[in-house]
Image (cartoon, rainbow, N blue to C red; front, side):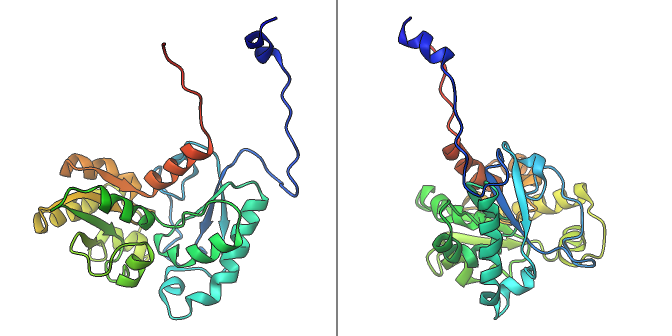
Amino acid sequence: MNESSFDQIRHRFASLKSNQAFYGAPVGILQLERKRGCPFIRPFVPGDVNNASTWSVPVRYKTVPGLSVDRILGPNAAELTSAVVEAGSELVREGAQLITSNCGFAIRYQEALCAALEVPVLLSSLQLAPFLERMLPRGKALGIVTANSRSLTPDLLETAGLPAGSNRVVVAGLEEAPAFAAAFLTASGDLDVDAVERETVDAAVALLNRRPDVGMLLLECADLPPFAAAVQRATGIPVFDFTSLIEFAVRGLIRAPFHGLL
C-alpha cells in the first residue's frame, strides 16, 4: 500500500480541550447589553454583525452586562473592562478561537483583551483603517462612514492606529439620517431596511462629492455591512466593513487545501 492510500484510510483522533463546552463555533462576538427601550432592541438583518447567518462559520454571542455605546464613550469606560474581559474569557472557554464585538467603539478594550486572552482579538472594524490607508495611492484618502460622526473621536482613530489629524482620513456620519437614527440611535422607530440603505448610499456619495480624492470606503458601524454592496454600486470604489475584517481572520484560522491542476 502506498503512502497516499494509507493517508486516505487512516483513523482521525480529536483531543479533548480542557473546560471547553462547545465545539465548531470559532468566532466569539461580544454584544452590547440589550435592555428594553434601548436602541439595540431591533431585528438584525443578514449582513449585520449580530445576525449569525452573516458568517461563513458558526459563531457564538455573549452579552457584556452594562456595556452600551454611551458607557464606552463616557468618562468611566474603564470601569467595564473587567466585565468585557470576563465575557471574552467565557467565549474562549466555550471554544472561540477569535474574539470580536458588535460595536466598533469597543476598540477601547482591545489592549485589555489582548493582554488577558490567548486568542486573537479584533474588536473593531476601525482596525482595518490603517491597513486600508496604507494601501491607497498617494493623493487618495480613506472615507469612513459611521453611525455618529461626533462619537468617532480623534482618540478612537488614534487607538485604531491612524495618525492624528491625517488629511488622508475623512469621516461621514448617519446621525442626521432619519431612518437610520430612528432604528439605531434613538429607538424611536422600526428598521426600514430600504430607507437605511438609501441613507447609507447617500452619505457615501455625499462624502465623495465633498472629497473626490476618497479612494476607499470603510463602513465602521456593525449594522452597515448589509448595505455595502449598494454603496459600492453607487460609488464604484472598494468598500470594506466589519465582515471584511472578521472573514479575513477566519481564513487564517481555518485553512482549506488548494485543489487544481499541475
